[in-house]
Amino acid sequence: MAGILKLFCDGRGKQLYGALSSSSPFALPNLIQGSQTIEFTLMESDPVGLFEGAPWSTVSPQTFQLKIGLYLVTGATQLAYQNSWVDDTNTEKKTGVLGLNTAAIISALTTATSHACIFEISIIDATGAEEVVYQTTTTLKKAYGIASLTVPADETVATQNWTRATFVAIEEDDGRRLVLKAGNFGIEIGVNEDGSVSINGILL
Image (tube, rainbow, N blue to C red; front, side, top):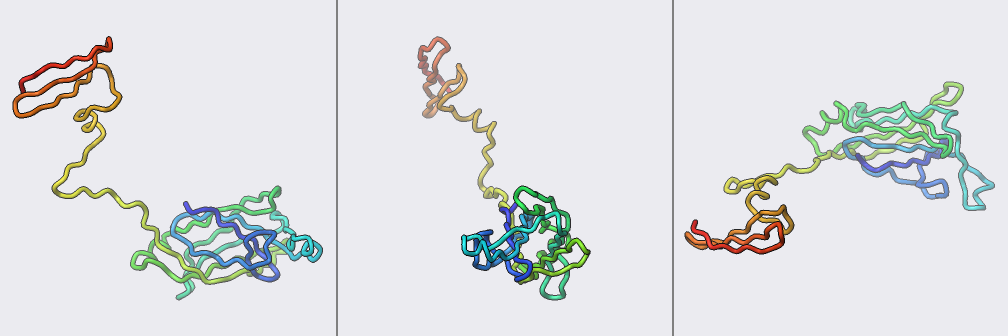
């Protein structure tokens, strides 16, 4: 899952900002296939707070409904959509997940590594009136995941069990022995349970 995408939206100015204290518009980053958690805060200009470094006041998340959609630039095909959010009245935000691995997205990214998209935010107020408060173009990128381990044809995979049975660990159970060999002869070295060391010559 991608990191949390925090959106602070000036509904009247139809702009996004990086924080409540910010006066500089925020550029939406590229989106990556998968699941995107979103925290959305609706703001209004606060002329009084502007002079105190707080240019915005928040709108209670319970006073409006939120819709966020992602559409292909070409053909305006809907790729993702979310209108179900959890209201947090303590932080004055709505939180939810925009699924970016829908059947439409999987299909669109089958033959392409990315697509130009339209990202749109709309709100519905208490009267039922709906308004688009933000719209921009962004890029949706394909997720490749973690590559699988590939073993060369002339090599063998060393499993954990095989490794433990073949090699002597630095710390291991009592009774394990280290064998050093040359041709048909070897030396077996071990530590006994009483702490004594045993060294024996062996014939292989």
